[in-house]
Length: 188
Image 1 (cartoon, rainbow, N blue to C red):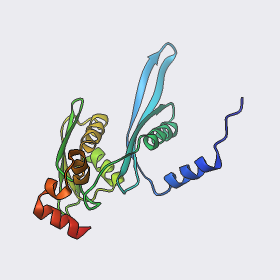
Image 2 (image 1 turned 45 degrees about the vertical axis):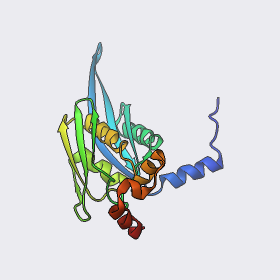
Image 3 (image 1 turned 120 degrees about the horizontal axis):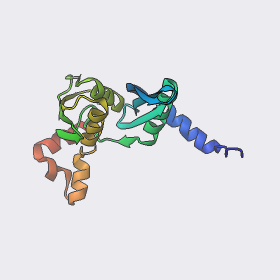
């Protein structure tokens, strides 16, 4: 039975999404299973993909060979992309904590010019996301899977002042306060 072909429209969409995406390989793990005939090896890959403009996704893939595992993880990351609100396109709106398993992370906003101050796996997430100024600390597990998932849990808690104002039925300057609202209006 032949596979159904993609329509031209869906191929164009895939091509548009595929351009200028930042792919970061976080971790490759070799898993060994002892079987009757000897040992069976499989590879597990963890990949983060983002557009550098506020969209990021995480994917994990397993296969017998490394390239296949990376391809599966990349495909999963493309499917799981989500939008994260950023302030001025460079940092987070507010400080936030995330937790997944034994992995805990603290993400803090930073003034312009600070750069990305974060450990290995978290740094890759911020680079793919397009955040330029952030201070992050991992507390607890240094396992890349737990650290990345805790980072995503924290990023999902970030809310823009506009979304909070809409949810509460107020105006943005009521949420931020007069001084910060005037600064935000001047920058827009």
